[in-house]
Length: 210
Image (cartoon, rainbow, N blue to C red; front, side, top):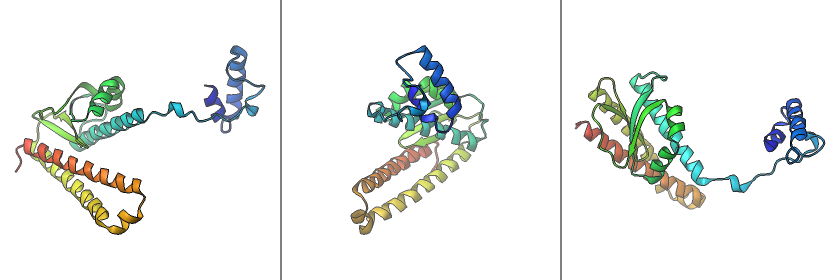
C-alpha cells in the first residue's frame, strides 16, 4: 500500500497525502516521513517477477478469448453460464487451469469445467483451438455442417499465417539480419501454427467431414 500511494501521488496528490498521513499515524513501519511529497519513488523489486505466473496468466487469457469467440460465432449470450471441456497435451495448461479454476470460471462465464489430457472430442460441441489445446462447448442443437465450415475457415486463416511466416524464415535477409531472439520467436510461432493446424484437422475429422 505504501508503494502504491507513492506511485499514485503525482496524479492523485491530495487523496494520497491524506491516506498517507492517516496510515502514518496508525503504523510506524509504513509511510515513513513527514509528507508523501518527500518520500522516495518506489523501487522495482525483481523478486516479485514470476515468469511461470505470467505464462499461466497468458494461457488463461487465450482460453477465455477462445470461449468468447465460440459464444460470438454460435450466438450464445455473453451472460449465459456454459459448461465446457478442455483437452490439452500440455502440463502447464493443465496445472494453470486447475490452480486458478475459481477465477477462470468466473472470468469466462463457465459453470461445470472438465479438463484432461488428450480427451476425446464430445459429440454436439463447438470447438475452439488455442495452440494445441482444444475447448469443447456443448451446443443447444449440434449443427455439424455449420461447425465444420467454421473450423475449415479457421484452418484456412491459420494456413495463411503459416505461409507468411515460412516465407519470412526462408528469406536470407530476415534470418541473417534480424536479432537471434526475433528469429527464434518466429520459429516458435511457426511450430505453434503447425500444431494448431493438426488440432483443427483432428477436430474436422471427428465431425465426420471429408
